[in-house]
Image 1 (cartoon, one colour):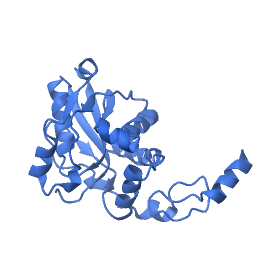
Image 2 (cartoon, helix red, strand yellow):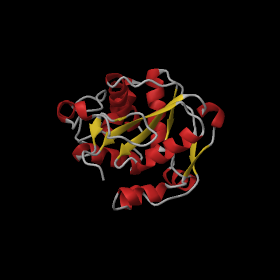
Image 3 (tube, rainbow, N blue to C red):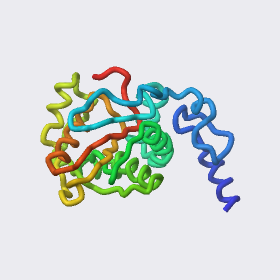
Length: 219
């Protein structure tokens, strides 16, 4: 096994999940420089109020190496990054005293899932679940294949873009539960708001949200 790992390191040298520079040790996943200088949200972890959501927190700001890393995660098959991000996310929910009964996620459409091969938010939710022991349950499905939110110009367009795009597919699991809704990035909060609205209509007792990163200024 040690020989195999050595050969794999020669063929695919380990790189930092954020700056993408080569790492000295194969066991490392984030370089020391990034661990020291990532754009941590700190006291600004909580996103301004999003309707239907009690609290939304993120450990990192969506900028520089974090933005590049999340792009690779979403579009370049770097699914292993989910476990790295989850470490930051779990620390963030502990620091912000987030508690819940179940974990779920904002889903991609079936068309997007088939094209990409995975749902990045589901990967994150399951990694957070594995680290906390809180059950991860599919509660939502995306029933409209909407254009990416990044193509919209403002908060109003973002809200209109996702309106009616989701539905709760597990009413029994949602009803009366405190749900932690997981996504990769929060900008205006439109996607999380629409998903939370569906869970609220399904009878969820409380909805909180967790993402890897958030923007500094609301779009």
